[in-house]
Amino acid sequence: MRREWWILIAAVAMLWLLFQLEAMLMPFIAGMILAYLADPLANRFQQWGLSRMLAVCVVFLLLSMILGLALLVLIPLAVQQIRQFGQLVPGIFEWVETVLAPQIRGWTGLDVAADLENVQETLAEHWQDAGGYLAQFLGQIGRSGMALVTWVTYVALIPVVTFYLLLDWGRLLDNLRNLMPRQWEPEAVRLVARCDEVLSAFLRGQLLVMLTLGAIYAIGLTLMGVRFGLLIGMVAGLASIVPFLGFIVGISVALIVAFFQFGSWLALVGVVGVFTFGQIIESTVLQPKLLGDKIGLHPVAVIFAVLAGGTLFGFTGVLLALPAAAVIMVLLRELKDRYKRSSLYDAGLRKRHDEDSS
Image 1 (cartoon, rainbow, N blue to C red):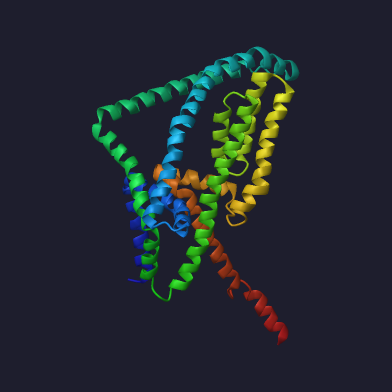
Image 2: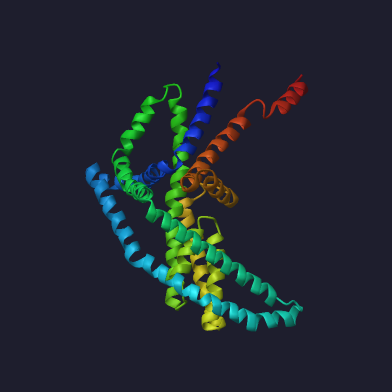
């Protein structure tokens, strides 16, 4: 059997194995991503004279402090604002029905009151369904002690896997490099370096961009006194993984909330100012310094990768989607470069040149 068939069979077997072990792989994949993200920080501490073990411990201490701050401060505030927002939804529908709908009917002749009632009924049905599914899920967890133990074990494994991978990250890379066939090593190292450049720019850079934009939006809206400012800022920051999506979602929701809360154009101008300031910081500081032109992932490709990964492999697929998309993009660029350097690309031009010269 030809070698290509063995490679194809191995690839199919690997995909089948990934499908079978999807749930179990989650803590290991999450640990690999976290170790990859934290490795430059650990290397920096090593350059300052710390041992690898001590550097990894310092990194874990910093991450634990950040996680503890989020759990103790940010998460409770976000949950509180979500509850407050849910209490305001009936009032918003009432305002639309009594104030906005008559104005729309007067301007356009369209009666949106009936459509609004359908929207309310649909939201109520889905809310009840969601509550039922949640109660059923919690009940199953409560009845199935093994499922709860498995879930807790997977979550607890993430920091353990991250710690040991981060501790031996350089050694693991050296071992993989030593296992490569010598004739493939230079080309493989070059491709891995390009993939690392794109991955580091996207994962580390985009993460910092999301956190910075979320902080700018949340702090700005909170200082203005806009209700749910923290929640809006967090959602806008997370949505910034897709270019301009965070800005569009955040400013739309913030304008609506500010209009209902203050009812003045000055507040709306302030909201626009906060998000404009965030975009200026992103375009002049964050993008050039953290991302540059190394990524090249189209926003549609980002959305497709996340949805496809989630559909195929669940939460594990979501974790793998963007790194896999970045690596595939590097490989496609390499194939394009090789194709343009090949004789097939300019075969017709060479043939005409030879005919003209003869």
